[in-house]
Length: 203
Image (tube, rainbow, N blue to C red):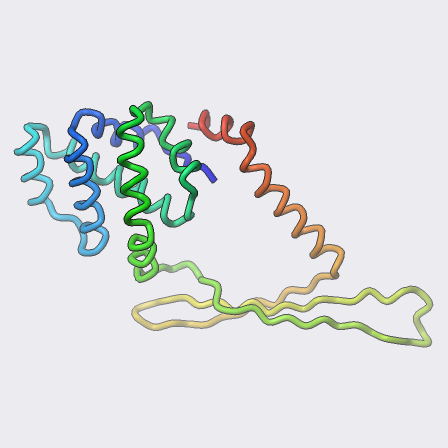
């Protein structure tokens, strides 16, 4: 999977080309710290004074880096996909490798931090299923189609409490197999070089 970066994010990340590799690493550390404890204007101001640049430029650079790392970690993209995603930024090989190293070093920690953040979206908890098959019937002359009943259990965090809900789904095995094969084909298609070229050019 490739990340699709907006023009705004590309502009924010372009600041990384103007600083040393050590500064990029420090920005990565600041971004990780901000994920844990929230942003701090004093840190932005201190970094801006050292670099002799506007505070907004430092803020945008750190926030752009934070977005890149969190989105990459959220989707657990591979090394190849990460490098292909940052290719559109026009960075040199050295800077791309620094960003890749930051991602590889911190993606597990970032995923752990993201899992603790409150979310209004329901999350998967469990799946229960049952296959219903009518073995015989005198009134039915045609073949009996088995039905699959699934109960999807979801959780949603709200004000420190966890609320549970469920969704019941019905389908026949052939429809389910068709759905699985379609999703697998879509995932395989995303890994082709043609799909990568298209995603790189999406703005």
